[in-house]
Image 1 (cartoon, rainbow, N blue to C red):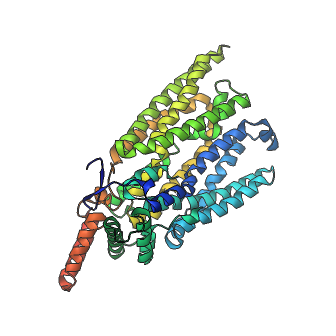
Image 2: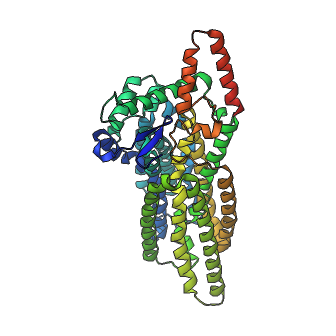
Image 3: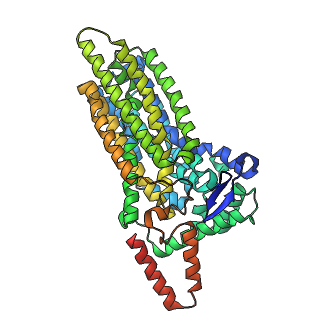
Length: 484
């Protein structure tokens, strides 16, 4: 594959410049509305850090103890988990775009409730409603982004993802609902400046259509599919692990409870805490966004492993520095060098985390799933995210208060486990179209996906006149899928 081409359906196509194509330029510039949903958890963590650092906020809520503080933080994750059962049906029946809009409207109701008074009950209920809306929006948005952008740009935009009425609906969803003409118009508008006769548009349209037809013909669409074949079990291992790893890599300690961590090194001034929090957010934005442009250059697996090794190194260094500070404090000495080391490695840790688990959490999860499982698969992944968030937000303040710096040792060990899982199960999907990635899990004879779907559909078409041949091939295809 050359630098000026990308692969689709077993062929190489010339790369395009998105800002030179009217339809692509317009849609890409408006997709920011869907991508904002990915920042909601990060913004919430930053907001909670800021509130916890403010004396006036703590006084308004009667200086919450660690248990109450954990409940206040975890309530949004509870709401997100409550949304899990309805998300696949919203995404598959109403559409990806409608799901994002619905989720955002529900979130506005939650924000209003949180803002109307200083009562713990109102704050908790409001954040549960906020989390419910977020659960719907943040699971529909990446589907819309991944299924709408040009194949050449999928990695960058899906990784960044996280005026919506100006964004078209997903062409894959439109085709699944029988709206083929509208789907082709969307593909032509975004990928070929409205030219429905463009060769790339017709190849994309044909592959998506044939893939969905074959999936409907040979497969059911139940939750049990997620573990019904070896390939799907492999996918589920990745989805479950990446969901937990995204929040159990130690980031939950600082994301929501930075003031408590800084207290361990003697920093209690609210202005200092807010300053560190603000700079940390800026570093996160730059590092998380910057790495998106290197996903296709370095590959997903390499970035995940780099992230894991970097986080281990940073957590070990932070743990040692925290221990040295505590030992010095017990002897009546303030170890400023140890305190500075902790701050530096908090920043380095987040850069390491962002290399793998910030943007690729959703983009990697989306692309390893075939269309029929994409909504349910992402729902499973986000359920694991919400479950781990709830655990983090409730347990972390209690653990920090009880065992202080020793709590970091738990994550040092856990990060080693993460690295082993990533090394063994995470596969590379670099420069591979969505419909083709299925072959990495189900083998070259998989009945779904890109060029293989096209070839299989042609075989079925030629066998239509011979019912016996058609039935035999269909049975063989089902057996092949089960074997893989």
